[in-house]
Amino acid sequence: MSRHRLEPRNPNNVREVVVGWDSPMRTFYAVVEDHSGAIPVDLGDSIEPVLRPGAVLDAVRPYAAIPPGLDDELLRDALADPGIRAA
Image 1 (cartoon, rainbow, N blue to C red):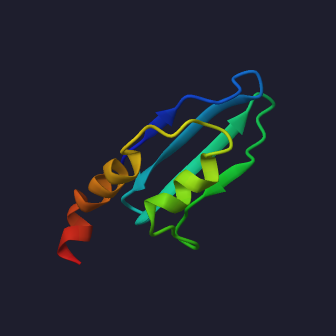
Image 2 (cartoon, rainbow, N blue to C red):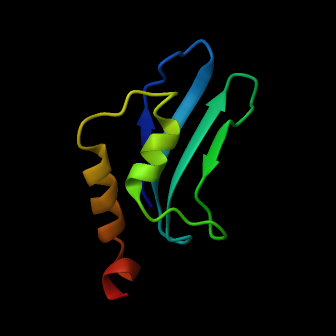
């Protein structure tokens, strides 16, 4: 499992932005949480897996700056998963 915390575009409104690879659920994921505890973005789970890193980055782009190369890093996170390599 990987977790990458991103810098919010507006830290007065958004508390946390994270993306990553969830090994047990075999999905990329994205979560955005604001200061009230609301979660405007919650993407990627075992029922609706996200198979492209670009999809989670597109989902959080309005909330956080995306560092160059993060899509490749997320893909490497998934490919490092032993279950993915064996599949």
